[in-house]
Image (cartoon, rainbow, N blue to C red; front, side, top):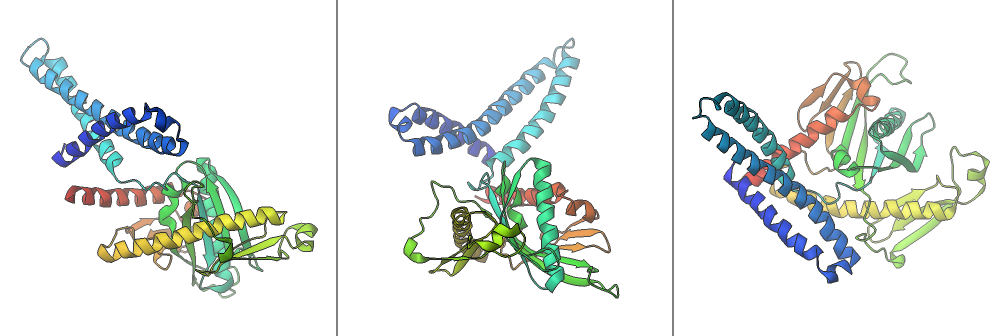
Length: 359
């Protein structure tokens, strides 16, 4: 194991002892917010320290087996133990490297996935609908729950804009690199001469704010409008002014919702999305400053970046950030996103590990 990794891991063992002591104190037990924070850190540190202890035990077992090699009667068994132990060491070191990588505290949170039609008119709106279906199918495959927070449907199908709330294990961590420009190349359903068109959508993935850490919105900074909902929804949705639009005056950020039956529920959903958009704006500004100092492999997540091309005539998906090309486009559009998301995650881990080695 590289010395810098061993040094980092020894710090985790020391930190675990400190956290064990903190969790035993009565004053910590009485402060639920601090107790939750320390408990979360304790769980993360325990996972790392536990694997490191297993690594050290494995090293000791190999050392003991090497001493047994001198005994002719035990040599064969000792060599088997050494071989299996060395294989386990390689596996454990790989696990520990991944566990040591910096974690975004938002990774475990639910996420809002905002999809907007861009260049390409009706075809772009249809593609936005395809993307929404792709993420919804993937969510169903992995056991996540999807809720439509707001939707502005196109006249011929698809969406001009749609916002999904996705809840489950590690949603934001898995989908965070989907933010950016998504380009599609195909023959539109409205094309009569069989020509291939290029159009685009933007996707923004935003973590749902933690209710304990969410920014406090000043009512004086908000303009809340109600209006009559449009689109599908039956007679009720067209007869009441239940749709809500909220404008954050200092930033000009807007969120609206018209999918709920009541004005109260639509207002609550719109405020949720508004908070996420404000926090995402702050996050993007921080990422832009960091990107000015160093160019990340995955990029800042700026939605103006063209991150991926979906080429239907060739059945090809290309992620331009990591030079990934897959010839299984139809399966991906049906929700088979696992290979893409995993490749992006591994690329990010490799980048973080390289940074860790320079510290």
